[in-house]
Length: 102
Image 1 (cartoon, rainbow, N blue to C red):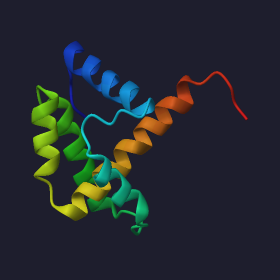
Image 2 (image 1 turned 180 degrees about the horizontal axis):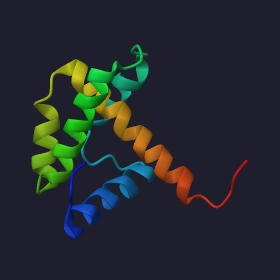
Image 3 (image 1 turned 90 degrees about the vertical axis):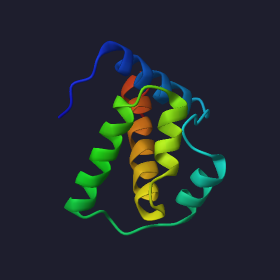
Image 4 (image 1 turned 60 degrees about the vertical axis):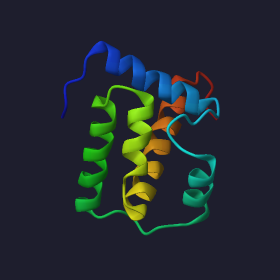
């Protein structure tokens, strides 16, 4: 578990809000399309911990451009897992904030 300050929390909330509206600040559209066109196997516990580490690192990086550079430096197979996890977080956030349940 990491400790984040209010500025970092605001940044994360902004990213999630923007992604919920279709503005994916950290990812290129082609990256997102590619990731969602494949169906990778479920993550192992080790892979889950690795993704968690990368997500935590993203939160602590100061600017969106630095976050984007960090993401672009990840190996392809790790990037796929990070993007899938990020969008799961966005989807869960949207679901939690939605007053309508079907």
